[in-house]
Image (cartoon, rainbow, N blue to C red; front, side, top):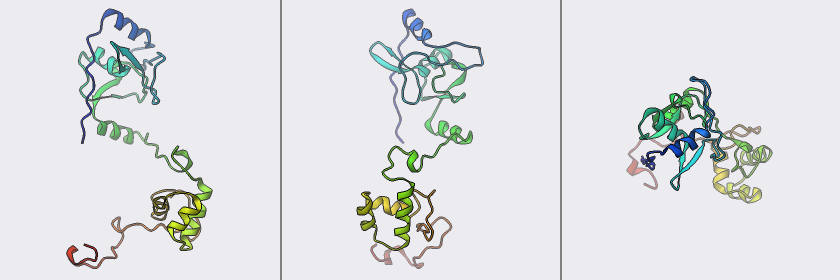
Length: 194
């Protein structure tokens, strides 16, 4: 696992403190204090430039509230990325943040046309599944629909477009998830190809 190193936040001057708080809508003590400055990431996190470097606003807010530079990532108890209320922020790891997200049911799996990487739509996935069920070769299907053979293999295995289900299509999953293995029980060294 790689450790992300963040640039230490410098000791802020009075001018920098005023500029920071001018961009924060300070509401009630228990409420979120959203970053209202113009600079934001795609995820909604505020950004501020200090001494030629860009810092995430919630990291600066954490420093000002807890009086120490965050060692890891700054997580939001409120689940509101622009929030700069130090009481809502804690120093945590990516795995803690992910576990918290999952426990709150905020994980949104992206599938089908909701993914900006999708090269096909539900109708084409349905047609591909029909052709897989009819035993057409993956390479032939891939060429016909201008996708990679790996995409066809992933559809065949139920890894992609599994929310679409064509009649007669049954995903071919690799043994392991409660499925019986097709390999006889003999040492790996005796298996073909090993």
